[in-house]
Length: 212
Length: 67
Image (tube, rainbow over all chains, first blue to last red; front, side, top):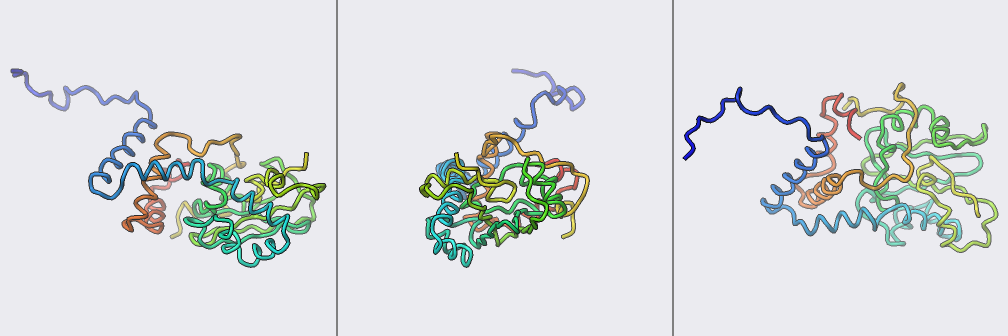
Protein backbone atom coordinates (compact mmCIF):
# COMPACT_ATOMS: atom_id res chain seq x y z
CA UNK A 1 0.00 0.00 0.00
CA UNK A 2 1.34 3.30 -1.00
CA UNK A 3 1.63 5.49 2.02
CA UNK A 4 3.45 8.33 0.37
CA UNK A 5 1.69 11.62 1.06
CA UNK A 6 -0.40 13.18 -1.65
CA UNK A 7 1.45 15.92 -3.43
CA UNK A 8 0.54 19.38 -2.32
CA UNK A 9 -0.37 21.78 -5.13
CA UNK A 10 3.15 23.16 -4.99
CA UNK A 11 4.61 19.70 -5.52
CA UNK A 12 2.22 18.65 -8.27
CA UNK A 13 3.73 18.56 -11.72
CA UNK A 14 3.33 21.80 -13.59
CA UNK A 15 0.37 21.88 -15.97
CA UNK A 16 1.56 20.75 -19.36
CA UNK A 17 1.13 23.54 -21.85
CA UNK A 18 2.69 21.62 -24.70
CA UNK A 19 -0.62 20.36 -26.09
CA UNK A 20 -2.28 22.54 -28.66
CA UNK A 21 -5.42 24.63 -28.50
CA UNK A 22 -6.97 22.28 -31.07
CA UNK A 23 -6.53 19.32 -28.73
CA UNK A 24 -8.19 21.34 -25.97
CA UNK A 25 -11.15 22.08 -28.22
CA UNK A 26 -11.41 18.46 -29.26
CA UNK A 27 -11.56 17.35 -25.64
CA UNK A 28 -14.13 19.99 -24.72
CA UNK A 29 -16.40 19.11 -27.62
CA UNK A 30 -16.13 15.38 -26.88
CA UNK A 31 -16.96 16.04 -23.23
CA UNK A 32 -20.00 18.07 -24.25
CA UNK A 33 -21.13 15.28 -26.53
CA UNK A 34 -20.77 12.67 -23.75
CA UNK A 35 -22.70 14.82 -21.34
CA UNK A 36 -25.56 15.56 -23.74
CA UNK A 37 -25.73 11.90 -24.76
CA UNK A 38 -25.85 10.75 -21.15
CA UNK A 39 -28.61 13.23 -20.41
CA UNK A 40 -30.59 11.79 -23.30
CA UNK A 41 -30.67 14.89 -25.51
CA UNK A 42 -28.77 13.49 -28.48
CA UNK A 43 -27.83 10.28 -30.23
CA UNK A 44 -24.33 10.01 -31.68
CA UNK A 45 -25.70 8.36 -34.85
CA UNK A 46 -27.84 11.44 -35.48
CA UNK A 47 -24.76 13.63 -35.20
CA UNK A 48 -23.03 11.60 -37.91
CA UNK A 49 -26.04 12.09 -40.16
CA UNK A 50 -26.00 15.88 -39.57
CA UNK A 51 -22.29 16.06 -40.33
CA UNK A 52 -22.71 14.09 -43.54
CA UNK A 53 -25.55 16.38 -44.63
CA UNK A 54 -23.54 19.56 -44.22
CA UNK A 55 -20.26 18.18 -45.47
CA UNK A 56 -21.49 16.61 -48.69
CA UNK A 57 -25.26 16.93 -49.22
CA UNK A 58 -25.77 20.66 -48.90
CA UNK A 59 -23.50 23.11 -50.68
CA UNK A 60 -23.15 25.67 -53.46
CA UNK A 61 -23.96 23.01 -56.06
CA UNK A 62 -27.57 23.43 -54.91
CA UNK A 63 -27.57 27.17 -55.49
CA UNK A 64 -25.83 26.70 -58.83
CA UNK A 65 -28.75 24.57 -60.04
CA UNK A 66 -31.19 27.27 -58.96
CA UNK A 67 -29.26 29.94 -60.87
CA UNK A 68 -28.89 27.77 -63.97
CA UNK A 69 -32.61 27.07 -63.98
CA UNK A 70 -33.34 30.79 -63.68
CA UNK A 71 -31.01 31.51 -66.61
CA UNK A 72 -32.65 28.81 -68.72
CA UNK A 73 -36.30 29.32 -67.79
CA UNK A 74 -37.78 32.83 -67.79
CA UNK A 75 -40.88 31.76 -65.88
CA UNK A 76 -38.78 30.19 -63.13
CA UNK A 77 -36.62 33.32 -62.98
CA UNK A 78 -39.69 35.52 -62.54
CA UNK A 79 -40.93 33.21 -59.78
CA UNK A 80 -37.52 33.22 -58.10
CA UNK A 81 -37.40 37.01 -58.04
CA UNK A 82 -41.00 37.22 -56.82
CA UNK A 83 -40.97 34.44 -54.21
CA UNK A 84 -37.53 32.91 -53.81
CA UNK A 85 -38.49 30.75 -50.84
CA UNK A 86 -41.17 28.91 -52.84
CA UNK A 87 -39.21 28.75 -56.11
CA UNK A 88 -36.15 27.33 -54.37
CA UNK A 89 -38.23 24.90 -52.30
CA UNK A 90 -39.74 23.57 -55.53
CA UNK A 91 -36.27 22.22 -56.35
CA UNK A 92 -36.09 20.49 -52.99
CA UNK A 93 -33.88 23.01 -51.21
CA UNK A 94 -35.41 24.28 -48.00
CA UNK A 95 -34.99 24.14 -44.27
CA UNK A 96 -32.73 25.50 -41.63
CA UNK A 97 -31.18 28.93 -42.31
CA UNK A 98 -33.15 29.22 -45.53
CA UNK A 99 -36.69 29.62 -44.32
CA UNK A 100 -37.12 33.09 -45.86
CA UNK A 101 -35.16 33.54 -49.07
CA UNK A 102 -34.83 36.61 -51.27
CA UNK A 103 -33.14 36.47 -54.68
CA UNK A 104 -31.51 39.65 -56.00
CA UNK A 105 -30.58 39.99 -59.66
CA UNK A 106 -27.34 41.38 -60.96
CA UNK A 107 -27.56 43.47 -64.13
CA UNK A 108 -25.19 45.66 -66.09
CA UNK A 109 -26.34 48.56 -63.89
CA UNK A 110 -26.55 46.96 -60.42
CA UNK A 111 -24.26 44.54 -58.64
CA UNK A 112 -25.57 42.93 -55.46
CA UNK A 113 -23.43 41.73 -52.56
CA UNK A 114 -24.58 39.84 -49.46
CA UNK A 115 -23.07 40.15 -46.01
CA UNK A 116 -24.03 39.53 -42.40
CA UNK A 117 -22.46 42.42 -40.51
CA UNK A 118 -23.58 41.08 -37.13
CA UNK A 119 -22.51 37.45 -37.40
CA UNK A 120 -22.61 34.81 -40.11
CA UNK A 121 -26.19 34.53 -41.44
CA UNK A 122 -26.04 32.68 -44.74
CA UNK A 123 -28.48 30.70 -46.92
CA UNK A 124 -27.48 27.16 -45.94
CA UNK A 125 -29.90 25.16 -48.15
CA UNK A 126 -28.49 26.71 -51.33
CA UNK A 127 -24.88 27.51 -50.37
CA UNK A 128 -24.02 25.17 -47.49
CA UNK A 129 -21.99 26.47 -44.58
CA UNK A 130 -20.31 29.87 -44.89
CA UNK A 131 -16.59 30.11 -45.65
CA UNK A 132 -14.32 31.61 -42.99
CA UNK A 133 -13.87 34.88 -44.90
CA UNK A 134 -17.64 35.44 -44.91
CA UNK A 135 -17.55 35.39 -41.09
CA UNK A 136 -14.35 37.44 -40.86
CA UNK A 137 -14.21 40.92 -39.38
CA UNK A 138 -12.63 42.24 -42.57
CA UNK A 139 -15.54 41.18 -44.79
CA UNK A 140 -18.29 42.11 -42.39
CA UNK A 141 -16.80 45.54 -41.80
CA UNK A 142 -15.80 46.37 -45.35
CA UNK A 143 -18.70 45.04 -47.43
CA UNK A 144 -21.07 47.82 -46.40
CA UNK A 145 -18.41 50.54 -46.57
CA UNK A 146 -16.47 49.62 -49.67
CA UNK A 147 -18.03 46.80 -51.70
CA UNK A 148 -15.97 47.70 -54.73
CA UNK A 149 -12.83 47.31 -52.61
CA UNK A 150 -14.09 43.92 -51.41
CA UNK A 151 -14.52 42.82 -55.02
CA UNK A 152 -10.94 43.94 -55.66
CA UNK A 153 -9.80 41.74 -52.74
CA UNK A 154 -11.31 38.87 -54.73
CA UNK A 155 -9.53 40.01 -57.88
CA UNK A 156 -12.72 41.20 -59.56
CA UNK A 157 -13.48 44.64 -60.99
CA UNK A 158 -16.60 46.09 -62.53
CA UNK A 159 -17.11 49.20 -64.70
CA UNK A 160 -17.03 52.41 -62.67
CA UNK A 161 -20.64 53.16 -63.59
CA UNK A 162 -21.96 49.92 -62.07
CA UNK A 163 -23.85 50.64 -58.85
CA UNK A 164 -23.58 48.40 -55.79
CA UNK A 165 -26.37 47.26 -53.55
CA UNK A 166 -25.33 45.49 -50.34
CA UNK A 167 -27.78 43.29 -48.44
CA UNK A 168 -27.27 42.74 -44.72
CA UNK A 169 -28.67 39.31 -43.83
CA UNK A 170 -30.71 38.78 -40.71
CA UNK A 171 -31.53 35.80 -38.53
CA UNK A 172 -34.63 35.33 -40.68
CA UNK A 173 -34.02 36.65 -44.21
CA UNK A 174 -31.27 35.16 -46.37
CA UNK A 175 -30.24 36.36 -49.80
CA UNK A 176 -29.12 34.64 -52.99
CA UNK A 177 -27.49 36.70 -55.73
CA UNK A 178 -28.61 35.80 -59.23
CA UNK A 179 -25.43 36.54 -61.20
CA UNK A 180 -25.43 37.79 -64.78
CA UNK A 181 -25.47 34.99 -67.32
CA UNK A 182 -22.14 34.85 -69.16
CA UNK A 183 -22.03 35.63 -72.87
CA UNK A 184 -21.99 32.89 -75.49
CA UNK A 185 -23.89 30.38 -73.40
CA UNK A 186 -27.11 30.10 -75.44
CA UNK A 187 -26.36 26.53 -76.49
CA UNK A 188 -25.57 25.20 -73.04
CA UNK A 189 -27.76 22.81 -71.07
CA UNK A 190 -28.92 23.67 -67.57
CA UNK A 191 -26.32 21.29 -66.20
CA UNK A 192 -23.55 22.96 -68.22
CA UNK A 193 -24.77 26.37 -67.09
CA UNK A 194 -24.70 25.29 -63.46
CA UNK A 195 -21.01 24.53 -63.78
CA UNK A 196 -20.36 28.22 -64.53
CA UNK A 197 -21.99 29.33 -61.28
CA UNK A 198 -19.52 29.77 -58.42
CA UNK A 199 -20.34 30.15 -54.75
CA UNK A 200 -18.80 33.63 -54.72
CA UNK A 201 -20.98 34.68 -57.67
CA UNK A 202 -24.04 33.82 -55.57
CA UNK A 203 -22.75 35.94 -52.65
CA UNK A 204 -21.77 38.79 -54.95
CA UNK A 205 -18.04 38.62 -54.30
CA UNK A 206 -17.46 37.09 -57.71
CA UNK A 207 -18.95 36.70 -61.16
CA UNK A 208 -20.09 33.61 -63.03
CA UNK A 209 -17.31 31.92 -65.00
CA UNK A 210 -16.98 32.59 -68.71
CA UNK A 211 -18.08 29.80 -71.04
CA UNK A 212 -15.18 27.57 -72.08
CA UNK B 1 -26.93 44.99 -28.40
CA UNK B 2 -24.18 47.37 -29.47
CA UNK B 3 -20.99 45.38 -29.14
CA UNK B 4 -17.87 44.32 -30.92
CA UNK B 5 -19.91 42.00 -33.17
CA UNK B 6 -21.63 45.00 -34.78
CA UNK B 7 -18.92 45.39 -37.41
CA UNK B 8 -20.61 47.00 -40.40
CA UNK B 9 -18.55 49.93 -41.64
CA UNK B 10 -15.71 49.57 -39.13
CA UNK B 11 -12.32 50.42 -40.57
CA UNK B 12 -8.91 48.94 -39.98
CA UNK B 13 -9.56 45.22 -40.37
CA UNK B 14 -7.60 45.08 -43.61
CA UNK B 15 -8.41 43.25 -46.83
CA UNK B 16 -10.72 40.25 -47.09
CA UNK B 17 -8.60 37.13 -47.34
CA UNK B 18 -10.36 34.32 -49.18
CA UNK B 19 -8.90 30.86 -48.77
CA UNK B 20 -8.35 28.91 -51.97
CA UNK B 21 -10.03 25.46 -51.97
CA UNK B 22 -11.34 26.01 -48.46
CA UNK B 23 -12.57 22.83 -46.76
CA UNK B 24 -16.04 22.83 -45.16
CA UNK B 25 -14.39 22.11 -41.79
CA UNK B 26 -10.86 23.00 -40.73
CA UNK B 27 -10.64 20.66 -37.72
CA UNK B 28 -12.42 17.48 -36.68
CA UNK B 29 -14.00 19.11 -33.62
CA UNK B 30 -15.74 21.67 -35.88
CA UNK B 31 -17.85 18.88 -37.41
CA UNK B 32 -18.93 17.62 -34.02
CA UNK B 33 -19.55 21.10 -32.59
CA UNK B 34 -21.81 21.98 -35.53
CA UNK B 35 -23.73 18.71 -35.19
CA UNK B 36 -24.15 19.18 -31.43
CA UNK B 37 -25.41 22.72 -31.94
CA UNK B 38 -27.95 21.65 -34.55
CA UNK B 39 -29.04 18.57 -32.61
CA UNK B 40 -29.58 20.64 -29.47
CA UNK B 41 -31.60 23.11 -31.56
CA UNK B 42 -33.93 20.23 -32.41
CA UNK B 43 -34.53 19.55 -28.71
CA UNK B 44 -35.95 23.03 -28.23
CA UNK B 45 -33.54 23.64 -25.34
CA UNK B 46 -31.25 25.88 -27.37
CA UNK B 47 -32.20 28.35 -30.09
CA UNK B 48 -30.57 30.85 -32.41
CA UNK B 49 -31.27 33.80 -30.13
CA UNK B 50 -29.60 32.09 -27.16
CA UNK B 51 -26.69 31.17 -29.38
CA UNK B 52 -26.22 34.72 -30.60
CA UNK B 53 -26.63 36.20 -27.17
CA UNK B 54 -23.87 33.97 -25.79
CA UNK B 55 -21.58 34.71 -28.71
CA UNK B 56 -22.16 38.45 -28.44
CA UNK B 57 -21.47 38.34 -24.71
CA UNK B 58 -17.94 37.02 -25.18
CA UNK B 59 -15.19 39.41 -24.09
CA UNK B 60 -14.41 41.53 -27.20
CA UNK B 61 -10.84 40.29 -27.50
CA UNK B 62 -12.02 36.67 -27.40
CA UNK B 63 -14.71 37.41 -29.97
CA UNK B 64 -12.21 38.95 -32.37
CA UNK B 65 -9.94 35.93 -32.02
CA UNK B 66 -12.63 33.49 -33.14
CA UNK B 67 -13.06 32.47 -36.75
